[in-house]
Length: 144
Image (cartoon, rainbow, N blue to C red; front, side, top):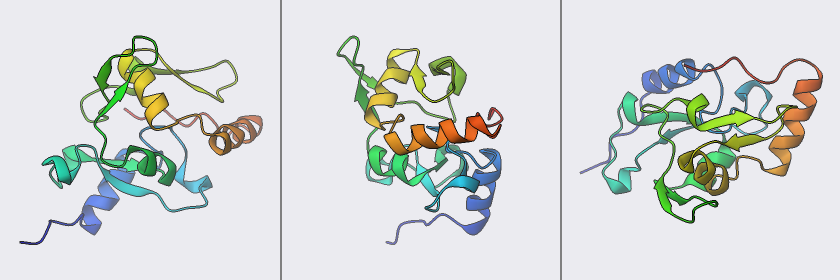
């Protein structure tokens, strides 16, 4: 039996729903040097479905770091916690920006684990955020 693939209609719907931003680090696809991915929040290897409620728009860096993970370690408490699920949780409840909008700050165990696990503050992403902030193109419009 073949795995159900993401359809072109689903790809378009997921990208539009995300307003062209990575649903994890908030990078904007229009400034990316690599194409964004449609990512299974709950990986297919763990029973995740190829349905709109299990798909997220992800930059290549976040997609690579997340791979098939659904849990991470909260660096403050050391506990294993579920990673952020963009269909079930709100970004601004788990994350915030620092004063110059260059760093994603984890506010909760889930947020902190996500920042660490997906390395949301990778050097290249931080540098791009600083440049984009300087020309008024960052942070992106919040995704609901």
